[in-house]
Image 1: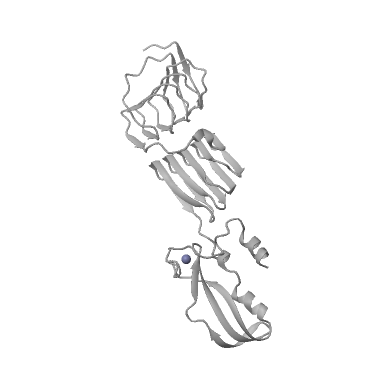
Image 2: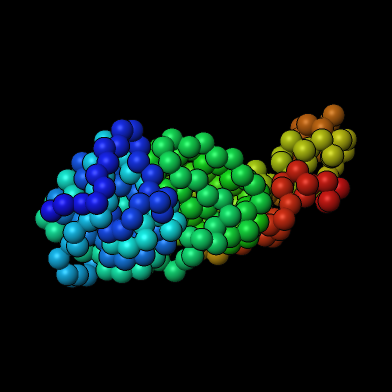
Length: 317
Ligand SMILES: [Zn+2]
């Protein structure tokens, strides 16, 4: 096979549209394609692992390349990066996100292929984007979502206030989202990635083309459900006979006695009638024996998604 142009690349290789197709890339470590990066077919031979959100098909024999690139480290194909067919051989792992190639993805002789059906998302619409090796990204107020490509990214997104997608392509990424009132839909294409979301966000794994990927939700803070602690209630009682109402965390409950849901945060609503001296209950006449419970799913205190617990206490005062 002869090519019009043969290049030896050292370090990371980026395909950005300047090479005449068909393009052949050999001998790299990982190959990361981005959405809409290849205008033709992608032929993969003898990769170690292939992770793909694009359907596998059978295409014709790989074409004779016009550009042959012998790589060294990793290879990245940017959007519009290859104007025709791309052939990858003798490479380590290949990551193929949704809509990476206009043509067919065919894989020959790879040891392991992890595939999942195309996720329902448009990576091009994501507004927090990073790609490359060990990127560190900080962002806030996302409108649509997070899209990372490569390895070892550390991404933190604050003030998520709407439903967002998180599209994780590659390996070793750590992504954390914090905010209120949004649902986070996570899609993995790769391995050993972790996504964590703060206690006021929901999350689901929509697709996982890979292994060792995990989503972690921080538990709902039980203090948010406590309107008034026992100590605060006693302080307001001051002196004399009073009935006080307070909430305490239920320490060993895993299910809410009120709504029946499994819950992170459960509080018991207590009543106590006592004689107080300097805010200390010196004589208890009566106390509730079977306190009502509520949790983050059924407590009215949990549902105001726009306020923090401190803000809410100020409103109640
Ligand atoms: Zn409940």
